[in-house]
Length: 281
Length: 302
Image 1 (cartoon, one colour):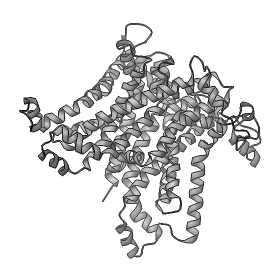
Image 2 (image 1 turned 90 degrees about the horizontal axis):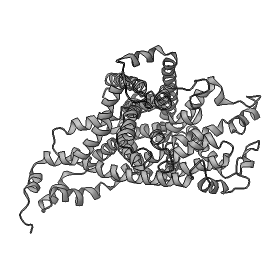
Image 3 (image 1 turned 90 degrees about the vertical axis):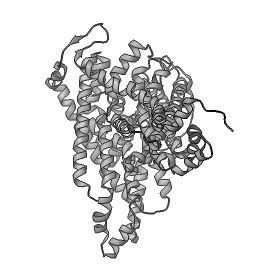
Image 4 (image 1 turned 180 degrees about the horizontal axis):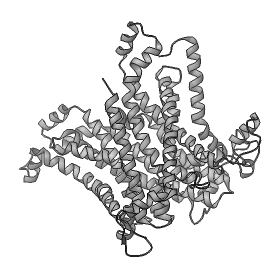
């Protein structure tokens, strides 16, 4: 712990420097998105937008950007994220509950397998999944393919977070409920679930943000406006519309603002989910 | 009062194993379908030459793997992957631990500070690449402007077009994004250290440095090592930011192995070779994890 006066000053300066470095790049892209295309070319670059305008946002969302409009990408991303989040929370809770609570001899083995899956780079799965989805199931370029892929990717960590959470809920509460005449399922639904709301929130926010930010899988499995997500649409812009800097930076801000705002609002739960793997080890 | 229960209901009530199994079944099926099966499938594919444009496959046994090590570009890509991993991890871990220690002290505005450092984590990797693209932009980037104003540079420099700088810039961008995660994990570990340990040390007359090395560091070893594993595994798999910033250029200077996997499998349509390369990366990751695990078991003493 730092207590001496000079050390305190140094601490504050250090923290300030850290915050500056952390926040500046994020601020910079917002700054750029609010300037007009002409202003963006100015040297020296403007620290603040001289005449703030939202023209870039209007243009990127509603004008054609190479066969699609950006708002379609926003729509796709949101749907995929919400559905994936719901599925992961639902399956994650019942699985996590089973592993945490019930005496099942294969429980530990399954948990071990789940952790093992995190070692596998998504790349190794990508090629077989591509063959399966494109040749056998004909599911390429659909939001469903993305939901399935993302669920598979994010389910293990959802189970892990909720498993850790269920372990903290005292068994007596359920026993009391069952003595009062509930079946197992009722005890699960009426007593355990409401108590694990924070764990569910932690899982939900982690899955949602991971899903909106994912790129590789989305790029390979989507080809048209039907299923392209924000990161993919954004990358498309880089190749094609290099001149319209304003549009690109506005698109980047849209892509970033959603997860950032959510992360700030739900940060308590987010930190829980991020450290779940860390300390419980 | 409830009526007579159906036999399956009562069976569920009494057999915990069955109930657990049923609950776990959906997740189990998903894991098998989306992890186990593709993993095996991928291994099988890696033994063939498979071009997605033409039907039919040609069995090649281990030839794909041998070709990987014969190809100087691919071997070089492993070197670049290792360089990237070591460089970004060095920055992330050192800066991360230092910042975590700083944040462990109480200061005004600490909750706000802790919120702000979440931002880089939440920003999509693709956007991270775009942001840094702009910062190092040859014509309108702020880095060039700052460096020339201060006199360090005499001329605007196209950073990402310079093979010796491109990968390093990407390292910086990656470190910016992930250091906050290291801070969070290490901070959580630091805050779990019971106050009594510090008091005991101080009563024994230990100064600040001694307290740090004898009390703080050992207790935070475990979170640090866990973070190290997590970040290493992620760094070896890096893709998004390279795709957005340099597309593997200039002159292959930033083509790490995962980039080659994507290129070989999806640009040149060689699924067999791509799978073989992906598997090689996986083996590398597993080997690293095993090494870390061994080191952990030796160093962590409580």
